[in-house]
Length: 165
Picture 1 (cartoon, rainbow, N blue to C red):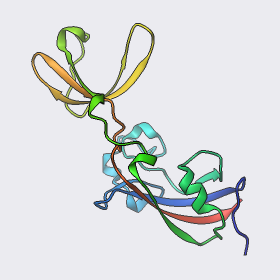
Picture 2: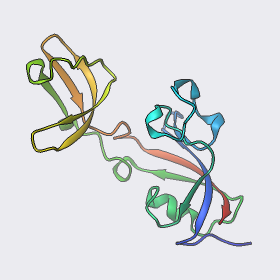
Picture 3: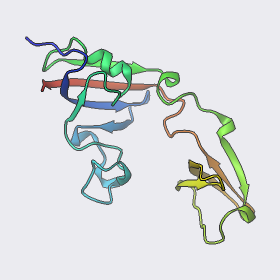
């Protein structure tokens, strides 16, 4: 039976979980909580559900997923499944408390009405942008977290090679 190698275009299914079993991403529709989606387009990263819609096509070694997944796919045959564990340091990095900062309300636009959980993009005078999550709101200030939402988390992927294209 054919085995996948670097440079091959393949079709896969995967489910990504956290150590507590929480699914953070999956190509399998029954693994996702689609109630979170505001649209029917779950393939859109902005929909909020964190799930792809159906199998994913990628080129092994093309940098589309973590290199550890490319390594796991290499040598697999269609129908084969593997588990890949990616430590936090190799995924989205360790959680960095220095990326949590507080800004006085007076330094923010007057029309900004942030709520805890909001994801925003902050900009400065040099046209640099920083993605942040609002973690605390008070009358005088807003606290932001610029860590990736999965920073500090070890990630486990169950990967199934469906076919070599």
